[in-house]
Amino acid sequence: MIKRIYSSAANMFPRVCVVGSGPAGFYAAMHLSKHLTNINIDIFEKLPVPFGLVRFGVAPDHPEVKNVINQFTKVANKPNVNFYGNITLGKDISLLQLRQHYDAVLLTYGAEEDKTLGIDNEDANNIVAARNFVGWYNGHPRDTDLKVDLSVSTAAILGQGNVALDVARILMTPVDVLRKTDITEHALTALAESKVNELYLVGRRGPLQVAFTIKELREQIKLPNCVTVWRIEDFAGVEDAVATLNRPRKRLTELMLKSVNETSKCREAKDKYFKPIFFRSPSKFLKNNSNNVSGIELICNKVVGDNLEHQKCVATDVKEVIECGLVFRSIGYKSVKVDKDIVFDSNAFVANDKGRVIENNAPQDLARLYVSGWLGTGPVGVILHTMSNAFLVAKAICEDFKDFKNPPKGGFEEVKKILSNHQIVDWEGWEKIDKYEIAQGKKVGKPREKVCNIRKMLEIAS
Ligand code: FAD
Ligand code: NAP
Image: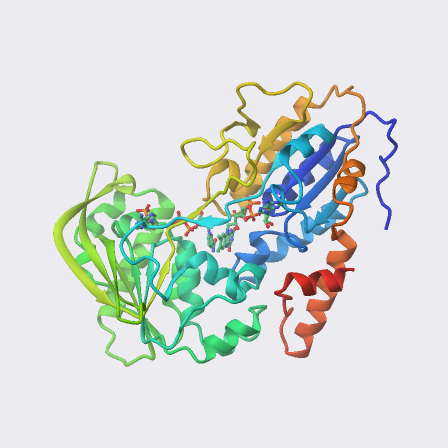
C-alpha cells in the first residue's frame, strides 16, 4: 500500500521520526498530524507489532483499557503517518543517522528494564521481575520462556503499586475467568496448575502511602474464593488521618479500612489468601541448597515526616522472615540508554523542557531532539497521563516547526538504504498479524491468541 501523499522530495514540510509505538508515540503522532497539515511522520518500533505496554503491559482482564488501540489505528491509517516495525534504535539504526535524515526526532521508547533491590541472593531461582511475568502472560517475545515455578504454596510480591496488584489478580483469579481473555496459552496452562494459595503483598511504607489505586484494590478484594487478610496493627492511627487526606487517597483508605473490618470477622475457609503487609523492607533473600528462594528477611520500618502521603520509611532494629518459594519484584520500571548519544539525567530519564531535550551543544545541522512518555517523565503514570505529556510535547514541536522552510531531508527513503537487508514490518504487515491472532483466538473462544515469537510474526507479516 502506497499512502504517503507528501513524498515529493521538493516539498518543504518537516519529516518527523517517532521512536516507539506505545501511547506516547501514537498520541504525539495524533496531535502532530492534526495540527501541522504539511508534515510526514514515520513511527519506528523495535517489535514487529505496535502499541507498547497497551499490548504487553495492560492486564488481559482489562480489555476496555485497550480500546485506545482503535484511536491509534486511525492515526496509523492517516495518509501522512507511517509505521515501520522491527527496527531497533541503537541496534539497526543509530540516533545520529535518524537525526541526519529527519527534521525532528521524538524519542518515546518507554522504560524497558526493571529496578532491582541490590540485596543478597537476588539472583536465586524463582525471584521473578514483575515486568517479565507481565510480559509472559501478555505474550512479549522477550518473556515467552520465562522460568516461573507456580508449584509452591506461598508467594510474595515486593512493592505495592498497580503492577503488583495486576500480578496478584492474575495469580488469584479463577483460571476459567482468564480463559475468556487474550492471556497467552502458555500462561493459562501454568496458571491452571498453580498451587499458589497464599500471597503476600509487601510494602515498605504504610497503608496511607500505597501506590495502587482504588479500582485495582476493589477488584482484588472482591475476587471469589480469595480472602484478604490484613494485619490490624498496620492500621494504627489510620482512621484518625482519613479526614486530612485528599479525595482519591481518602476513598482508597476508606476502602482498605472497610475491608480490614469485614475480613477480620470472616471465619469462612477460602481457597486463597491475599495478605498485604506494611512497614517492611526486604533486606535479604533466603535460599535452599538448590539455589531456590525459600524466604525473605524483612526489616521492620517506621515512617517519619509531617506530610502523610510523602512520609519516608526509616529502618528499626526489628527483623522478620516470611517463608515463600516464589517472589515477584514489583518496585518499578526504568529506562535504558539504547544509543550512545542519548543523555540521561540523574533521575534516570532524558532531561527535557516540555519535551525539548536539553543538550549543551546541539548540532545545528542535525534534527531537533524531543522526548515524551515514560522515557521523558519517568516510569509512572497511566495512559491518560502519558497522553497529556505526548500532547504537550507535540505542541512544542508544532511551535518549533510553524515557519518551517528548511531544504528537504531524505526521511525514510534514506533509512531504507541503511536497512537494505532488513525485514521491515509496515502497517499492512501488522494488520496481517492482527487478523491471524484474532482468527486463532476465535478457535478457542478468546478475543485473540497472540503470536509470541518474532520469527513467526515476521513470517506472517511478509
Ligand atoms: P511504552 O508503552 O512502553 O512504549 C514504548 C515503545 O517503544 C514500545 O512499543 C517498545 O517496544 C518500543 N521500544 C523500546 N525500545 C525501542 C528501541 N530501542 N527502538 C524502537 N522502539 C523501541 N495504564 C492505564 O491507563 N491502564 C492500565 O491498565 C495500565 N496497565 C499497565 C500495566 C503495566 C504492567 C504497566 C507497566 C503499565 C500500565 N499502565 C496502564 C501504564 C501505561 O502502560 C503507560 O502509561 C504507557 O504505556 C507509557 O507509554 P510510553 O509510550 O511512554 O511507553
Ligand atoms: P509504582 O506505582 O511506582 O509502585 C512501585 C512500588 O514499589 C511502590 O509501592 C514503591 O514504594 C515500591 N518500591 C519502590 N522501590 C522500592 C524499594 N527499593 N524497596 C521496596 N519497595 C519499593 O510502579 P508500578 O507499580 O510499576 O506502576 C507504574 C505505573 O503504571 C504507575 O503509574 C501505575 O499506576 C501504572 N499502572 C496502572 C495500572 C492500572 O491503571 N490498572 C496497572 C499497572 C500499572 P514507595 O511508594 O515507598 O516508593
